[in-house]
Amino acid sequence: MTSVAAPSLPWGEVWGQDAAVEALSAAAADPAALAHGYLITGPPGSGRAPLALAFAAALIANDPGDEHTMRQVLARTHSDLTLLRTEGSIIRIEDARKMAARSYLAPSAGRHRVMVMEDADRMPERTANVLLKALEEPPERTVWILCAPSDADLLPTIRSRVRVLRLREPGVDEVARLITARTGAEPDVAEQSARHAQRHIGMAQRLATDEASRTRRDETLRGVLRVRGIGDVVEVAGQIVQAATDDAKALTAERDEAERSSLLRTVGIADGARIPPAVRSQLSALEDDQKRRATRSLRDGLDRVLTDLQSLFRDLVMLQFRRETDIINIELLEDLHELAARWSADRTLLVLDHIAETREALEQNVQPTLALESLLVTVVSGRAPGREKKA
Image (cartoon, rainbow, N blue to C red; front, side):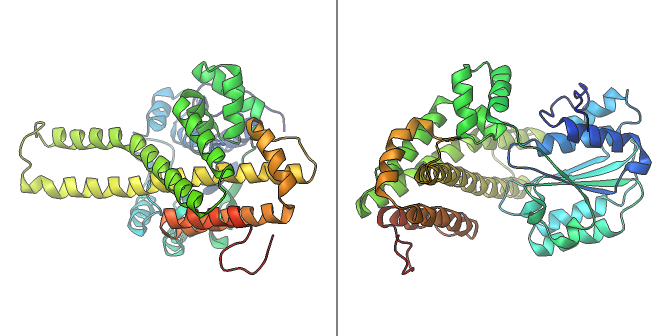
């Protein structure tokens, strides 16, 4: 397939996915080529959500020149677009039911009604079964677009009812050039950020524009490398959780206050005024949503820490097998060489296994500090708690 440049609308925010843009542009233009359901997969930061929204705009617009409709869809304000994304740990079944019910409505102004679910991998099985019913017999002019890191993240029964489109993963140099163009970051900072983010565009952009984030990442990895005993384990685990907590609060606090002020303005309550009982339930519901978002933000922050640790020990095992290409943490190369001489590859692989287990434990609501302390005990001892195997 020949690579093509994306037009400004609706594909202007889609970067580095020319083949996907070409395929979806053709599907939007040809009813015979259009499926009723799509699953867009790719690693975090590959642009799944912008591509899904651009495809929705192309499907809803009445013709390729209908820029007004496209801009409404891209702004997420068009009546024929239903967008579901979650900032909680899972997609709630009641939200999936509401979305499924809306999918049976005819388009009000555009060519199609489009249902976009950005975090389809966060559906529990019970919730996925609600979606399955809607996908089995969709109305003729309704199109579903699901987004997930991998098609393996969804039930086989869901996968069998959608067309899968896998996105390519951009290279470090490509992401660095994009970050420099978008933010004006120095090329060396952009390259380091793209490498440390492992080509995740959003994370690379944040690292490139936030020196504090770069510093926190460096301090975390160096802290783990210096862990030598149980005292260090407790201290470093506490520091990691505290840093992730502070980061999550910084990301959500301003937004939380803006949402609260907006709600009070909408119902005509001035700042500092007494809140009447009739509004308290709305405010309580908003606060519950914000708490769920804060929990998700903390988990995402801890998951980023685990991703960084995974990159560190991945680099280590590469050195142990005499490979120095594609090292992610070049800045720590001297420390990694020293550790590679002291550790066996089996020990490093054991740590990598425990990082994956820690990620799963955090998703199961294990207390974060305890989960990280268990991981760091493995780093210190070369033994996973509860196992007999020695590294």
